[in-house]
Length: 128
Ligand SMILES: Cc1cc2nc3c(=O)[nH]c(=O)nc-3n(C[C@H](O)[C@H](O)[C@H](O)COP(=O)(O)O)c2cc1C
Image (cartoon, rainbow, N blue to C red; front, side, top):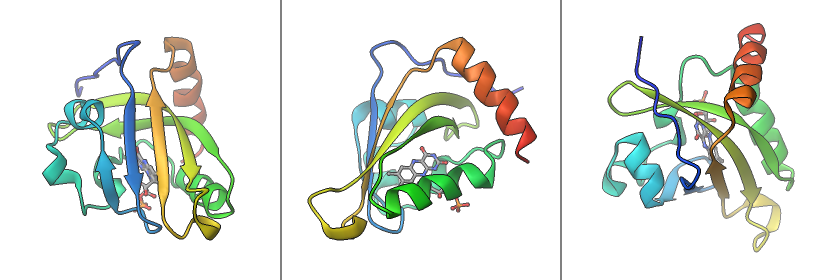
């Protein structure tokens, strides 16, 4: 069993990508919890934190939504550098300062409740 990091109420993870999902910025909480330095993250695809339990369709929905200029929200299980995992509730924004997401996306993540995680976990198991 890999180790879970349960977010604190005050944890707030932010990352920014270009229009293809390459990381441009990550804040301290993101770096600390994912286990990377900022230099290890910048320039990498955001799938660097992708956990194998996450269904492909969740990310298709994320990309379809933000590419069409809308805000996506959802529960995401991510993997840490050392092979642990953590759950977040993510809100992903298209950059409204640019036309049609052409200058990238921003994700802000907070702690989900244990009940919310349990529901997402059950749902994602049915989506594989
Ligand atoms: C702003 C933004 C934030 C993202 N955050 C995550 C994330 O925390 N974890 C994750 O696995 N994928 C995240 N993604 C989706 C990845 O870009 C990617 O689509 C996903 O990891 C699946 O990998 P794949 O497309 O190579 O199959 C994010 C995408 C965007 C645009």
